[in-house]
Every structure is written in C-alpha cells, then in structure tokens.
Length: 334
Image 1 (cartoon, rainbow, N blue to C red):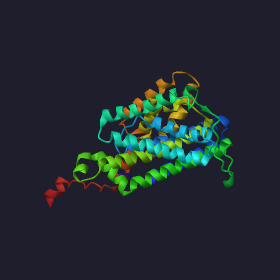
Image 2 (cartoon, rainbow, N blue to C red):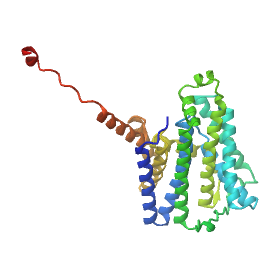
Image 3 (cartoon, helix red, strand yellow):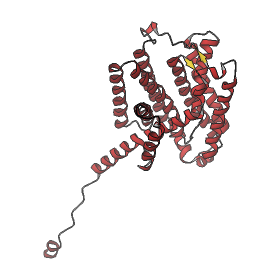
Image 4 (spheres, rainbow, N blue to C red):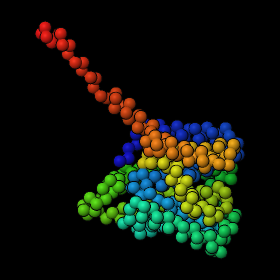
C-alpha cells in the first residue's frame, strides 16, 4: 500500500531543491544532465507504478518512451502540426500502446510476462528501425520545442527547459501518488498481493492491469515527447531493450515500490555514469557493482533502505520501556 509519509515528502522536496540549486549554479553541460535526469525520473516513476505496485516487471518501457518520442516527432515534423498537438499525441499514443500491451499480457506472470513485454518492445523497435516513413535508422531530425511564450517561458533556453522538465517530473510523481492512494491503486496492490483471490471476488483483473499499464504508458509518452524536444532528434535507439534494462536498474537502485526511489535512482545512475566515465570507459562495471551491493544489502534500494531504517527507529521509540526484573533478595524479604 502506498502512503505519502513525511519522509517521502521531505525526500521529494529535498531532491527538488537540490535539482533547482544545481540548475541555477551549473553551466550548459550540467543543465543537459539535469534535463536527462528529470526526463528519466518521469520514465522511472512510470515503470515503478506498474512494477513496484502492480507486480508487472516490464521490459517494454523503452519502447513506450520511444513511441511517445516518435508520436511527437511525427505530429510536428511529418504532419506539420503544432507542438501542443504533438504532446497530446505522444501522451495518447503511449497510453494506447501500453493499454494494448497490458490487455494482451494480463494473464501472464513472472518470466512469461517479462518476455512478452520484451517481445512487444522489440517489435516496435524493429518496425521503426526499418520504416522509411519515420526515417529508418537515420531517425527524425528537426524536432521543435513547445512554444510556451504565452506563459512567459522560452523553452529554447537550457535552464528554462530543464526546470520545466523538473516541474513535469514533480507533476508525474503527484499524479502517480494520487492514483496509488485511490481505490484503483489499492486494488492494484491487492492484485499484486493475491491475484487469484481478486479474481474470485469477481474483479476484472485484466482491465485493472491494462488501465494501470495505460497510465504508465501515458507518463512514458510524456517522457518521450520531452526527450524528443531535448535533443531535437529521434532515433530507434530510444526503443531498444537496453533502455528498458537501464530503467529497471534505476528503479531497483532507488527502491522498487517506493515511487520516490525511482526518481532518486534516475539521478544517481545518470550522475554516476557521468562521473565514472571521466576516468574509464568501463562505467558499466562500476554501475553493476553498485547494483549488486544494493541488492545484497537487502534489495530495498537507496531510498528503501533509508525508509527501512527510519521505520525501525520510529518503532523503537514507540515501544514501551522494558520492565526490570524484580530483585530476588527484595522479593524474598517481601
């Protein structure tokens, strides 16, 4: 069950504050990193929504990410529509594709569900890689950014765009948290805990799974649209299964089933890759060692471990003090 605890709220505010402070004090390259973190945080939250709370470990979220990017690029570059229409198309396209995947795979579990989502993702990747309409392996260049001049924002400015992506990441967290606190979210957690019992109670499990996947796909589509605007270029590499694999690492590293841990994991992985790659090209080895250490430490991830220690401390404070055993001599004299 999801609870927006004071610790979660404090962590979200701390991460947001650190991100804003970093953005205001860094240069162009730092802003590029911050933008990447904010976009991947949205994508990681989308995955944690279904994996951490619905028990659906997905390897197709890279494809959902890419579908959102290509939907935005198709609307703006190929069809000549405005960026607002492209954004709506990205979110809607990601939601629709994800809902279809969730509906088809709803009756599979474990490794079979993982492989089914992987197959969907690779099919989408192969299609876009070979499709001349979408540029094939060359991708789509010239993707425009959203015109927010009516709001007094110039999204062509790196700082403004980075802070906008950060604000949307906070919005994605707020929407996901509200959904998980609702009756739908509690039902989703119930399905993860005991799907057979929920079926016996007459619940249409496949509809809830498909709907949860659809919401997750909408967030992934939003992340894809932002990624397309960030680089102003789209390639099939966005849909490759390795993107989904790295995304799963972020969620596990931060804390599966914590929501805020997904965003934390995105930030840690992006900056860890950047810092380690300054000294060696074998940054994958370091990231792998960090992930192994996180799993062997209890599998709770960075935020999950922090939350575990916090709850233990609170439980120790609430526990009544132990009553000292009566002294034998005193008892005897009595």
